[in-house]
Image (tube, rainbow, N blue to C red; front, side):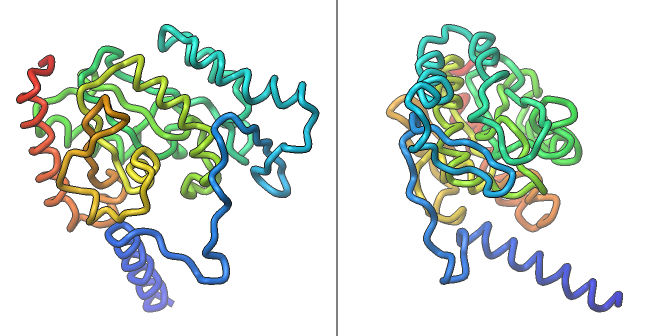
Length: 263
């Protein structure tokens, strides 16, 4: 039994490594994902089917639950206003019941913003992104390049925890992205660091792998410079990626100083 468990663990580690480096892979029969919808199209959550379109819903309901929220988001002037909207935004929920909003934390005037994928168990309990073992490792990484956690701003693509810590679904990312974009624009960081493949692929609208995305600064929305590195949780499973992460964050710190960012 122990030999079988050891084999299973090695297989899982190998698959995670392949996916992180070379990108997501799927069984051909289920390869096609749903077409990305407009951010203003509304989705609902059903216990049986997860997220589904609401094209057949009455127009009044769609306006109330979808388009109306995005109009309110556009009008936001502060992070507090945006967070208040998120508190009651059903479209940000996943198919896991009774989760806590994990909006973001840190310096609202930060020149560096870190963006992960979605809250996990500990984040959901505390209402704060990147806590637990992954959060401690992230704090250590920041300290190694002379940052304190309170110097930066930290957020996720999703504001609510998905079940079983699964990857955020395409539609979940699409619905949450306008909120994150507004969050970024209110903070106006000079640099963005994407933590993990899904965060990077979502913001850059690409399917490129980590190996293709790392190592350079990408223009983002013609306003920001964006860099990509491994997610701290991935480093806990694959310590061989720590050297690459160290190279990434050293380059990030150098660019931060070149831009004359606030200490």
